[in-house]
Image 1 (tube, rainbow, N blue to C red):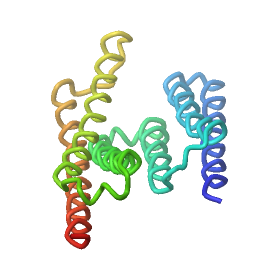
Image 2 (cartoon, helix red, strand yellow):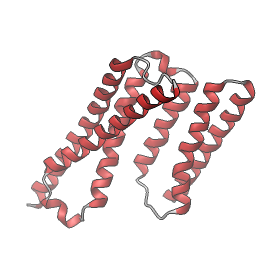
Image 3 (cartoon, rainbow, N blue to C red):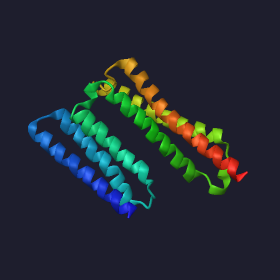
Image 4 (cartoon, helix red, strand yellow):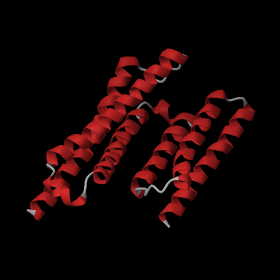
Length: 192
């Protein structure tokens, strides 16, 4: 059931972005059809994973992924919410939290359930926070590279924009890392 729902969501998002890509291409709106084309690719990645792998997907992470894509690609870039000023920072805060949840999912997949009671809650905290911040850094490297090599303007505010984005990523990741720390500490205390 979960897999079928995610398949439907991936197909729906990909078709929506394909429609927008075609629509804006016929109108000659280069920026919007390029964003929509990127949306097709972003929607196709989970679609390909669902169809061609046996990966078990974390439903909240996948729902958050598509909500984030919709908020950044459609609302932010195509409808122009990024011009509000705070939208980009808000999305970086959310992406920091989303990456932290991915970090938690990776931690749970990479550790044996019986061994988790022996793992320090501080290690969990640092892993989740580091994973989230690293994701934010990689994104800023991407923005910088696109600006340098393809004369794009992803870092509209230069260094200030980059630092605000990294602070927002860190704040979102820190919030989830603290929650993961508290939950891990409680589980460790209960099992001792």
